Image (cartoon, rainbow over all chains, first blue to last red; front, side, top):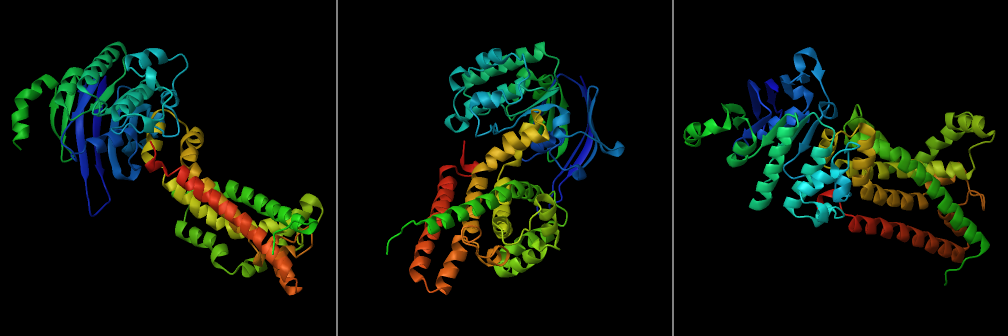
Length: 230
Length: 231
C-alpha cells in the first residue's frame, strides 16, 4: 500500500503553540509511529482521522487510492468518510453500553464476531459495562470493536499499553496474523519498539512535530543510539 | 392546618400538572436541539443568541407576559395561527398558560442541555464516527444517552419552574376556575379574596409538587453522574 503524506498542522493557541510537519512517501502495510510523549504522535493520528479543524491543516494525505484530504483542491473527507477505525489510547468505550454493545456498535453483518471475541479472550466480559473492566480489558474490547467495524484502514494508538506481558504477546500475535490475512493498511502508535518491530514493516520516529527518522524497523538499532543521545 | 383535597383543589392541582407537563414536553423537544446546537457551536452570533434566550428568565415574568399578550392576541401572530388551527381564541385558555410556562422555563432547560452536551467527551464522538456512525446514529446512540442524565435533571427543574409560573400566566390565561386557574394564580386570588386558609393549602400543594420535582432532579444527578465519572 502506497502512503503519501505531505501536510502541516499548527495550533492557534498562543500559549501552547505546536506545529506538526510531515512530508514522506512510502510503501507498507503496517506503519509504526514512535516517539516521546508530546512529540506529535497523537496530533498526527488526529490529523489522519480528520479530528483536527480543517482550518488548521494544510497539505494532503493519500493512502493507496483513498485521498483523505487535499486542502489545495478543497478535498476534506469527514471522519466517518475516511473509514479509519480508531483504537484510542484510553480505549474510549461508550460507558452506557456493555462490552458486547460496544463491540457490535457498527459491526458488519456476517463479521467474524465470535472469532475475534475468542481470539481476544473477551467471552467472560461481554455483559459487563466499561466501569467494571480493567484497563487491559477495555483495550481489548476497543480493539475488537475496531476490527469488526467497517473500515479501510486501522489506527491503533498504544493498543496494548495496559495489557500484561502474556496478553500483549498473544494479542500482538493475533494482530500479526490478521494483518497477514487482510489487505488493510494499519497505523500502529507505540512507545514500545519491540511491538513496532514485531508488527510493522515501516516505522516513523516523530519528535517535536517533525519526522526524525523513517525506515524498516530492523534498521532502527543503528540509528537508535544517535536518536537517544539527542 | 391540614392538607386536604376537595374538588376545587384537585382541579387546580391537575390543571397545574397538565400545564407544566405540556410546557415541559415542548421545552424538552425544542430545548434539546437548541442546547445541542449551542454546545457544538453551530449557532451564528452565539453570544447574542444566548443573551436573547436568557431574556425570559432575567426579565420580570409579567413583562414576558406583556409580550406574550400581544403575540397571542387575535391580531397577533400566535393568536392568528391558533385561530387558523382550531377556530378558537388562544388567550384565556390553558394552552396559553402552557405557552407562558414554556417561555419562562425554556432558558433554564436550554442552559442545562447545553452543559449536558458540552460534557459529552468529543473524543467518544470522534471514536464513534471513526467506526462508521453517521450523524443521526451518533446523536441518538452516543450524544443523547451520554447527555441523558443532565437533560433529565434539567427537564425536571424546568417542570418545577413551570409549576410555579405566575406573572406571565396571569396575563395571558387569566384565572378561570377549572380551566386556567393554576396553583400560583389560585394562591394569588385566594389572598385577594381574603381566603388565607385556601391560599395556604394551595401553597403547600405547590411546594409539595416542586419538592418532588427538584428531589427527582437531584436524585438523577447523583445516581447517574456526569460521563467523566462513569466507566
